[in-house]
Length: 130
Image (cartoon, rainbow, N blue to C red; front, top):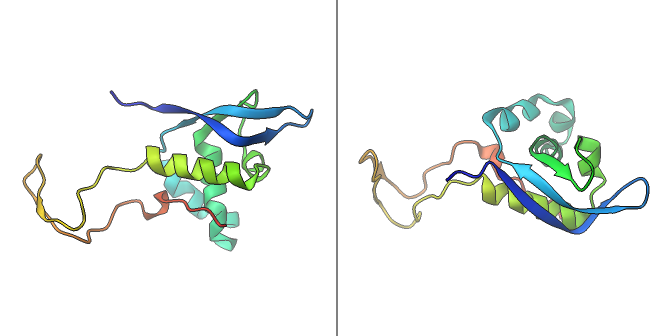
């Protein structure tokens, strides 16, 4: 069964304005629009590393009691928490690919699979800056 939402626990936590530490949250699967639309954002065009901030602000649906996650919310995360969310994003949005060292054929359509093929959505693999 396809899981659309995934719960997470941040290693450090988002520090709220009132001093509350928010650690538990939810991230949903990314859509094509989540990966395409941020590319037109001027902040991403000026600084490509900002793509992960925009992407995460679109797919993280809740952090603790914070239910409106914005780019500013993601900007205020501690580096360990940002890296944790980037890793989670990459895990839940990846497609299981055949071992790139082997050739074979697709079990569904029979098309030949060759090593070194490119993935669609090159922006999907968001990386930690540090």
